[in-house]
Image (tube, rainbow, N blue to C red; front, side, top):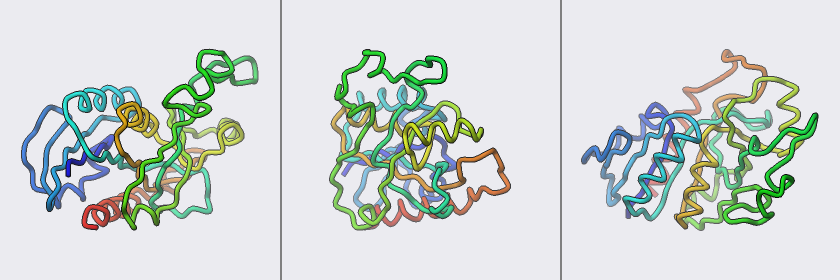
Length: 225
């Protein structure tokens, strides 16, 4: 089985990689490993949707995979979800893609630049319907995320985005990953661990070490399964 693991930074999956056997470096961003019966390519895209889209598009044109996994940490809008919980982001979108009209936001659909269900979107959302036979994956809470260029840290903007999209998580790469996989008809999953809550920036309340530990343990459990 050929698996592609996509992460913005190597730090986010460093613990997981220690379990793999290195094979070769295919390019500056892509390295090949083996683990049990799997051939695993690891793509480190860099932070943000632009670098993710470019790197992933380039790789998917050159290589074939049975499954792609986007792994990383995320901010969470729901404080009922504990820090460190690992989530399955099954719906994602680009909430900044549109135009401002005074106090109102106009989506591409509002602007008549995109039809309501233009592939791969469903009402401007990307929905992952990949069927993956995994008890560990099926036990993960399925949530909706948003993908942004600027992480939210202003209360007014946070309340506005929550009212428009009702997200649970936010990242800077997820929707770009899902868009590419949907276009290529590639089975995929976006797994993210909660490192912090989306609020006025307060790094003292973050728990990145816990999020990374839980993320990597979950990924390893899925592969072992």
